[in-house]
Each structure stands twice: as structure tokens, then as C-alpha cells.
Length: 532
Image (cartoon, rainbow, N blue to C red; front, side, top):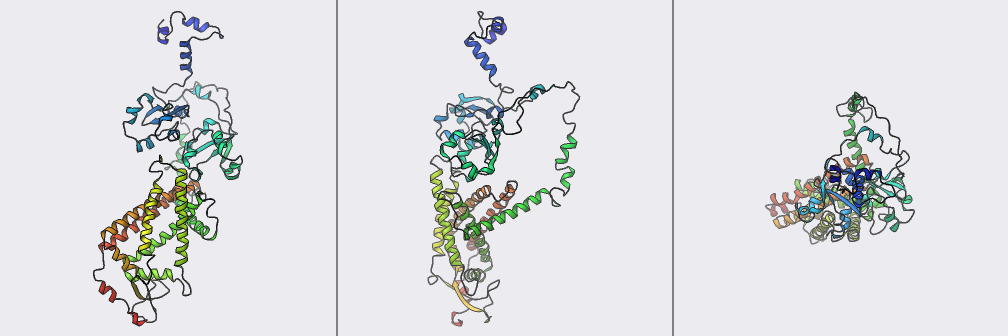
């Protein structure tokens, strides 16, 4: 009777009758609830594991984990101000980090307290017999249960028409944006994929991403559990696990990684791949016309970005001459315009650089309006926002320095030679006396104003932020760098962005705090034009 009261069964249907009822008899409504409750997955330790949450990743059954709590947000999907897709991207996952970036701390308590199911808990170890009875993973393919485990942007699998694909490296290259793929990460996306893609698109462009077929999980007979409790779980730990740790002997040998060890070798290899990426893509940009496939294709961004990064690196290193005085600075600028006695170089380079910049701006704008929306978060639009600031800054900078005619600019006279440091002493008549636009004087004059210093520093910050995020995306999408070296290559990319940012940031400050106090003396130090 006590059990009947707990289960909510009345006296008209006792436990004995329930047990012996015919199979064809329709169960009572209460019995249906009991059976459904028994069939549902039970939460572990008064909560829900992330494995359980991961199973609820569809529009009709959508759970997410937020700050240690599990929420059923199925009914909230059509009401979400940011759109259904924003939630479905994290269906069956922990969305705490992204959620906390844009929501107040009490938003769940205020508006969705009824959606909270319970806390997130760790999965408890199952009995040995139960583990033995679990379905065995097939050896000739992948089950959808296995696919579901790979649902992050660093490990992304999808199922398409009976095939399992690892699309992790393709995420930043997808013309429709990363979010379109991440919505179906760890799921079967065949229906949605076939609606908008040709039948042979995977075979043509992503055949190397195919891991194998989708198969059903095959059940195996439960193995007999041993009653010998004396067997230690880690009996072979010292033989198998310890040597692989950092203190093990294998880490002190050169058999696998060479005498420098795995870390140094991986960074050296990554640096070689990183430099080769710049060399190869710059050569491709100059000597091939296939720099983009269509106006919204990402190759138009990548090629032009790498070419411009090479230029700004050379430009930043050249500006170091600013610290050593006018003749160093102007002689280097003159050399860039006259690297050989019979030719000029800077003009064609600047024309090509202008073409690369226009291509970069055009493709970036088209892609932003094609793949983003007003509901996109600031971090998704960050490259567009910083790029817009950088574009305005560059227009002003070019009007101040590059677009000023040599006749209208102040002239700097010095004796030039075609070897470093590209100038001779003023009394060395063996060197030709030449004149060039006095870029040093123009720069120092502008930066006498603190307002211009602030303007340039704001532009440098926009440049640094834009380059830092841009080079991260370029390296992540670049197929020429093996995946195992990408994290080390990212280190060099970020290091490059920080070094260039600091260099450009220092020039206006140096000019402002170390100005030319006597411009008459500055002009008198130059050789006189009469000597020409």
C-alpha cells in the first residue's frame, strides 16, 4: 500500500494486478506516466551530465548549460530577440562564456527561471556489468553518437548523406560563415545541406574531409564480469602512462622529436611554415590573376591582407630610421624610390598596393553585408568596425604624405649612394647630391600638434586590433600550415602584430616628445642646392 501511495496508484489497481495485466490491456494514465518516467534518462546525482545535455540538440528538444545550470529552452526559441539560430548554435552544449559576454547576471532568474531543469553534474562511474553491455563502436564507420561528441569549433564533425566529415579546418573558409556550419556541429545536416548545395560539391571540394560512413551501433553480448576485486585498475600504469608524461624517459630522448625536444622543434617548424605562407602568397598575389574566385570569396581578403602585411612590416622597419635623424630617414625613403640607378620601384609597388587595398575593402564590405546582419554581435563585426576606422585613417595619412606633390613639399638635400646607409657625408663630393621630399620634416611638423598624435595613435590601435584578429583568421584557414603547427604559427602571428603595433605606436610619441627645436639650424645643416 505504501508503494501504491508513492506511485499515485489507487486501490482499484494494486501492484499484483498491474504486474499480471494482459499485454493488450491499455495501461492506465498513471501507469503511462510511471513507464515514461522509467524510460527517460535519469539525471546523475540529482542533476544532469553534459553527455545527457548533448542529446537534446534539436529545435523540438533543445537544452543548454548556463553557469552550472541546465535549461530547457525549446519553447523560448521562437521568442529569442537574437533569433533562433543564436541559441541553436549552442544546443546541447555549454554556452556560459558566450552568454555572459552579452547578458546581465540575473537575466535567467528574471525571465527564464521556469526553464531551469537542474544543475550540471559529473557523470558517475557505471557498474562494470553495465559498461560491458554498452553497444560496441563499429570499426568500419562512425555512429551518430560518436559524431555528436565533435561539436565545437576546434573539433567539428557533421554527417552528410551517410558520410561523416571533419570540417574543422573549413569553418573559417565557409562562404556562408562559420555559424552556418556550427548550427549542425555533431549532427546530421543532410536535409539542410541538400537544399542549397549541388550533389557533387563534397566530392569536388571537400573529399579530404570525409572520415568514413555513418553506421548503426552494433550491440555486443555482455562479457562476464569478474568477481576478482583484487585486480588493480592501474596495474600497468607505470609501464604505459608514466613514460608519456613530461617526467618520463621518452621526453628526454631525441628518437621522436630530435635533440631540441618536441616544443622547440614544433615552434621552429611553425616559424618556417609561417614565413613560407607570406612568401608564397605574396608571390601568388603578384604573379597570378586568380586572386579571388568571386567578389564575396574569402581568397580576395586573404591574398590582399597578406600582401599588405608584408608592406606594413617593411614600412614599420623603415620608420625605425626616424629615431636616428633626418638623413637616415630621408635617405632610406629615397633608396626605396631609386633602388637601382636605372629604375624606380616605389610607384609600381604603391599602385599594386592600392589595388590590393581596394580589393580588400570591397570584398570585406560585400562579405559583411552578405553574411552579417544588424543582430550580429560586436565581436562578429569587429573586423568591419576596425577596418572602417583604419580606412578613414589611411585616407588622411595618404593625403598628408603620399598625395602631396614633390614641388609642394619641403625638399631635403643630401649626398646619396647605392649602399647602406644610403648616404655620404655632406662634404664627400664623390657622392651625387640629390634632393627628395623631406618626409622627416613633414612628420615632425605634424606631430608637434598633440591632436594629430592622438589621431594617429587611434589609427594605430585600430590597425593593431584589425591585424591581430585578421592574421588569426588567415592562419586558421590556411591549408599550407599543418594543423599540428597551427597553434605555434598563431603565436608568431600574434607576436608580429604586437611588434608592429608597438613600433607604429612609438613614432608619433617620439616625434612629439623629441621635437626639432630650431628649424633654421636644421635647414642650414643640409648641403646647399648651389652645389648641384
